[in-house]
Image (cartoon, rainbow, N blue to C red; front, side, top):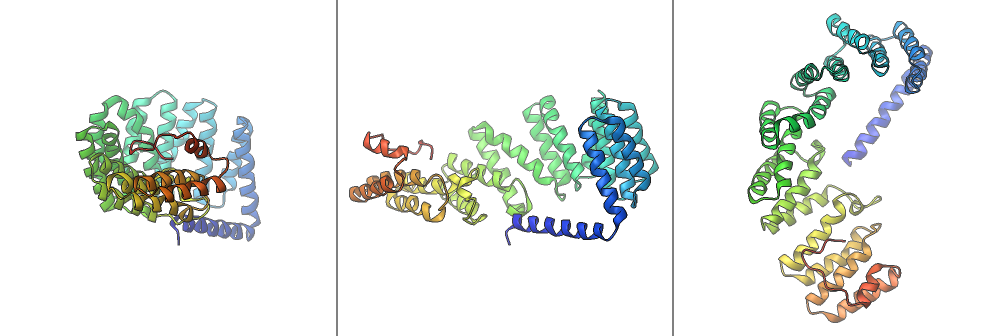
Amino acid sequence: MNWHLLRIVSAGLVGVLLLVGCASNPALVQWTSDVLVAERKLQHREYAAALADFERLEKNALFRTDVVEMRMRQAEVYRRANNFPSALKIMVDLENEKAWVDREQLAKILYSKGRILDDAGASERAEALLTRVLNTFPNTAFGWRSWVFLKPRLERRLGEDAFIELCRKMFKRHRNTSIADNFIFEAAHRYFLRKTPEGNVRARKLYERFMTIWIFETSGFWDDVAWELSLVYHRLGLYRDEESLLERFLATREPGWPSPSDLKNYKYAYMRIAKLYMFEFEKPERAARLFQQYEEAFPYSIFRDDMLWWSGHAWLKAGKQSNAEQTWERLKKQYPESKYIRRIQAGYPAPTMETPIP
């Protein structure tokens, strides 16, 4: 089963189980409904009313974890009302009382405390606390959130080279945690953006290391890494490696609706492979067939007419004038509104390797 589909199905099953559980306990149904009402009041800046509701919900909570959550919601009311001392006191009390039920909730308490400190202007204390959360709870959502919060500040303060070195050190420290891919990606991505010979070599090394550790299903950065590494291969003239990686890139999705070709990067991967055959591998006939097969591979793509235009030029490059004319005739019949019809009639210059597609 597709990984994303599995997540959706799993989330749906969890939702059904929660609904079934709530339905068997009328008190829990009412409590949950009251939480939503209190949240709406908070969103509408009815702070006094929301605070009173969350205090009542804390007293009526059926589970210890919900008691803690309702106290944190009270702190959130104070934070949004700019009453930072009251918000901070609640979080300090929760930490000192050891009221949390697990490490995830403790990480949430400390993370929220750090954000309140930052809002209150105590940025140095906030960053120190969030660094502690990052390093102590890297396998929690709040360890990751701490990194997201700290990252832009650290990069501005340290400068790019020092930030890259920090990322490399953080990867070594957290290499066996769920957050490790963040650090190797951030370092490699900055080398990639430099577009220099040295940057390309360093980016390649880090990206290839990434690809040996993670697969598509295990890192949210996999798509970006695969795409950027394929571009690094192109910069370095490693065209067979580029083709192989793009094929692997495409294999992580199945054609359907929405078509992978209409999503970021996927719409170009298949086209780039065809371009490699047209220019770098000097096999324009193979390229022409790949461009034409695009329609079959991605039947819902908005770029089908683009591919026929490219296919016609690939046939011309292969010395097959009649094939090019037949391809463009099909373009006129199937896509009469296409901009490429005007280009053909006007003798628009043939594309080169530098011509972007579509």
